[in-house]
Every structure is written in structure tokens, then in C-alpha cells.
Image (tube, rainbow, N blue to C red; front, top):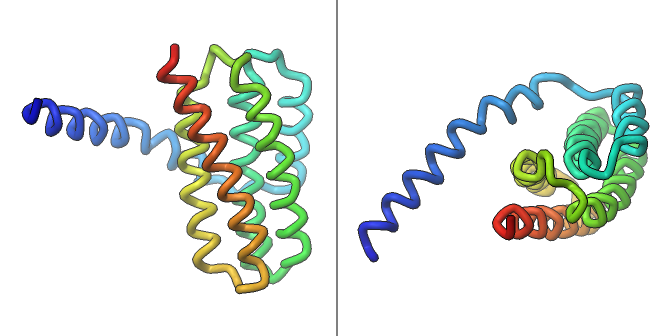
Length: 153
């Protein structure tokens, strides 16, 4: 059984390296309110099979946008964006069972988004941390559910 552990670790590392360029490309563009609104409309009108991934993409863009708002000193707007993320995380939770098309991609994107939100947590002020922690907790829960659904298939 011991020889399988290094093989499993190596497989996971290779998978993470192959996914990294796709995730890095998402971080290259800085989302704005218009692109978020367009993605939200697209996600709301998408077929149930596509909604999980589109909501995951929307949550990712909103976290990036919220980070930019915090950096610009727009704390109230950033907090409002994080509250909206909580609502979309609930929509991801509902859409998980319907998505068969890009569930693994949604899971990877959610994991990356949770990582970015964790970075925001460490740089946020004490007053902002409860909301960021709540959002991170909810995002981690949805990411775990998505991962379990991927392994269930």
C-alpha cells in the first residue's frame, strides 16, 4: 500500500500543474460591474446543466472584484459584493446535482476562488473579517460538495 501513496501524490501534483494555466488565465483580467452583470444574466438564463459552472465563474469574478474594491478603499461596496457572493454560493449548491457538463471545472474554479478569498481574509481589517470568514466558509462547503459530486460520478 505504501508505493501507491507517492504515485497518488505525483498524480495530484501533475493534475494541479495542468490546471494552473487555465486558472491563471482567469485571473489575468480584472472584472468590472458590467462583466459581472452580463455573466449573472447569462448564468440565470443558462440551462441547468451549465448553471453550476457559470455561477462558479460568477462567484470567482465577484471575489476578484470585491478584492479590488477593498484595495481601492470602497469597503461598503466590497461588503455588498461579498453578501451577493453568499447568495450565489447557495445557487451553486442547488445547481450541483443538475450540472453534468463542467462539474470538475467548477470544482477547480471554486477551490481557486476559496484560495483567493483566504488571501483576502488575511489582508482584511478586523471589522471586515466576520463577513469574509462567513463567505469563505460557505464557499468551502460548496467546493467540498462539488468535489464529492465529481467523485460520485
